[in-house]
Length: 338
Ligand code: BDR
Ligand code: CA
Image (cartoon, rainbow, N blue to C red):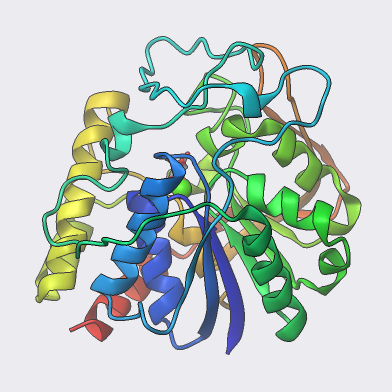
């Protein structure tokens, strides 16, 4: 079994990432950490717990709340001082270039106010969420230290991941792979230049992707490949036809995601289900094409969050995946929940 740690901001596609990470027999899911992003931290944490409960894994897998906001690194712009106003995404006005003035950003127009709107089948979570970033980082580091070959999967902003490597540099050498959903080459979804996860914390993304030790372990799934993983009508009907509460819940979640992607981005064939690709690519036979590069992240200005690549590095960018195998994994996991 491959030991993995999932850092996420559920989020509809994050929920599918949790499903694969928790249910595929190839993986030993050591823990889940959450980060602000699609919704404020409290909501992404509750959502992660609710998904685990829905799929019957809540007693085995613990959820650790991580960063509520980007961390101050001094100098130009302190994300920690920004308010948490709920800025909705309007793709027609891609004008969030100024880090210094941008509020912490969530994505209610894509994922709803809860971060996981569209179903009444998610179990209720009643506990209070208190962010304990440092104990979350300790839990991540210990999981990696105690489980040789651990793969760290990140499907939200890289705030927790960057903080982990800052706080515990030994972990950089111990982690096997850092599988990241983020960025786009020549494309964006939050601004014309930037993908949401990287834009949210371009500073952390720059630290992670620019660290030579870490970069050599990064497997990056950018929008260029995640936009091929579309939950088409055929995929939705496969999900629904599994039957049972969990399949119905994911069908409803994906239907909501389809509707917001259509209204916000004009996607007609279905939504791109980005995040679970970063879990699936850890398995043999899923990636069919990749390249090795060095990646630079633009941090400030209008092009904040833009990725620039140079040939000849050690960071792996996934270019193509076997989509039939990928969707078969999703169906297998839903069947395992019946
Ligand atoms: C990424 O942004 C989030 O809204 C999704 O969950 C995914 O991680 C896609 O840009
Ligand atoms: Ca996500």
